[in-house]
Length: 111
Image 1 (tube, helix red, strand yellow):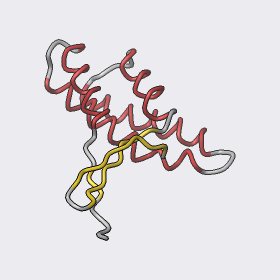
Image 2 (image 1 turned 120 degrees about the vertical axis):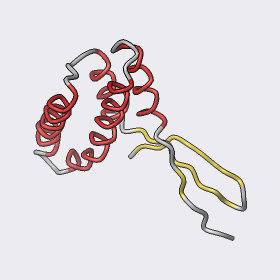
Image 3 (image 1 turned 90 degrees about the vertical axis):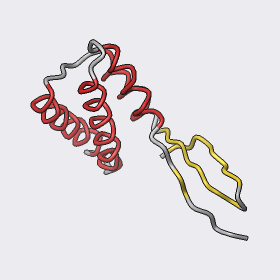
Image 4 (image 1 turned 180 degrees about the vertical axis):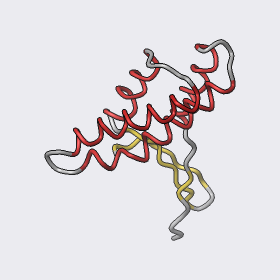
């Protein structure tokens, strides 16, 4: 039995980037900025795992990242960013795919 390779595609960040494209006046810059923001926020999710203070540290880290992305792109807070936080990061879901015996098997799992 082969172990397989874990293959992942950032589906949720892509969906939010497409929404940002239309929300900010069909701007490719906005779509790329939201995609970057989404990827960075997902990488910092590990901070929230720290006992007792992790959620507070995570809050300040994502605010700092948003400030940095805002200084680069000029994006402002909107319902899109709030929905990213609620849907993807607070629920902690990700898509995990494995290739086993030539078949791709995907499922949604908690982080």
